[in-house]
Length: 231
Length: 240
Image (cartoon, rainbow over the protein chains, first blue to last red):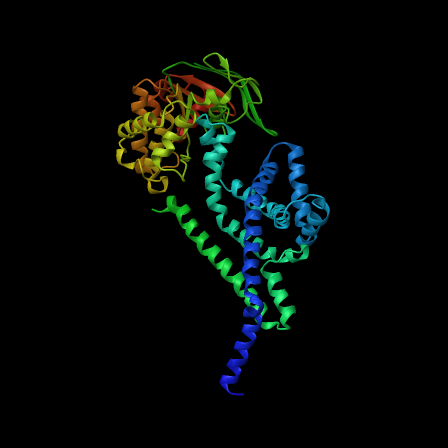
């Protein structure tokens, strides 16, 4: 087998996998679904995470218990199980778009991890910062939001980025509830063409590129956050 | 101006303050000295409720500040505090450090606060540091900024918690000079310190604390030169 026939074979497989019946569209639409689900989940997850972190840091016992149970349950069960419970049980009779319900599931999951990151970040800020804020007459909330949180965000930024990346990859299970994301698209092409190599490698590349774009963007943002550290 | 009655503070089992009665008048510069662990910092921190007294009352201008209904934030806005470790906000510029509280608490507009901050920076000799971040400053500069930050709120009294203890020796002078100027200008000050020279020169009254009580109180020169109590004598013989 010379190089030309080998190359010809590769080309044909490629065309069959991605061009025939416009199957590249499946992947493109999959990218859209993955991004939609992940972005909404990241945003909601941050909100949930912050609220749960406040529960865990609060002096009120009932709030502590709520926070503790939340993180315990979420961390103690697989995300596929959570996704399916949210989709087929909790939201079974609610008419929302599939991707939004899936986002809720990922946000609820991510919130538990984000809350631990935020809690650690807030605790990492020296007590003297809070005391300085309170001694000036700022109330607890003002001190939290103008003094503690901005500094904590800077400290926890790398850990949050990790969580975002994990979350994007985690969305590869949305096929379980019938959404056509990147993973499902690759899988679909595999079944339709009986080719495993190309569709699966393409799936991996698409995820990789997406996450690379995210890390580069977040890296730039972090550099800007670090401005006040420069000497 | 500040009245303290029967002040007790304990951390769990450990009794730190054992009944303090003290009256601080407007314009006084009260210097608090004593061995480490004597409760002087805790006493100071009880005055603006950074520590909650376990027993007793603290009054500012005849208002009990540790009453359950007291509006502690409004009261704290009238009492500045300067910390041993400066506690400047590292994510904000010097100007933002100074203007944050006056603007947030609607005491001044942004423009007024900035103008006032610049004026105060001039007074402490740091007019060119307005846009610097705390990490770019020396310890002495940080502490002078921290004093300005407290002053920006127009406090009635400023509490100093060992303001020069974390400084390199060559920077102690510049901070003490600012404090001396403040005292001369009539600011009421309560200063926990180990600087006996400052106590003698600037203090209007000296309190010696040991084991959670005030043991001796009086004119700084007299107490330093002729201490009446045995424990004051023994402490001063070690530090002077």
